[in-house]
Image 1: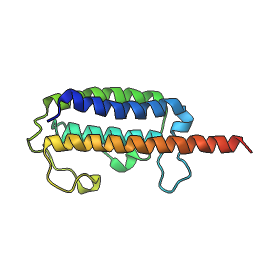
Image 2: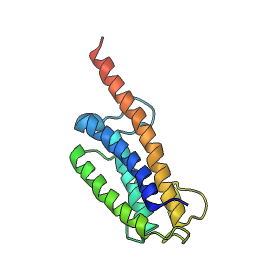
Image 3: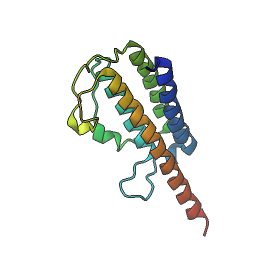
Image 4: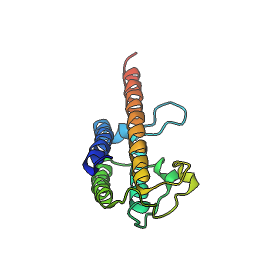
Length: 159
């Protein structure tokens, strides 16, 4: 239905958008949470997305052992450079997982209900689609976070 390269093209667009936002904001602003109820920092949101990719493609599609603390992902903070390095590493591993996947095959594990994935039994192909779903929605969310953070910077400087 869709080629591996087509899938990875759209995944890369979402990852490129998020890494561009985090890199553009820099260390201080990428770790800023805008004054919105329940908002995350762009850094934490990208950290969460890397957890999604690692778990859903690495564990459930490729069958690798993956340790994930989903709650801690949302508290992620730190310098941007090492986070962007992690993106490159996880992106390369995702490409390997996609090329090795058997889309109609069952998952190689059962996701915990706390991970808030789809509420039905999935195939490997559906798990990869969930990865894209998460990246696309969080890319849009991160664009809003960036705009709110930058707007807050503007109003803090302008009387």
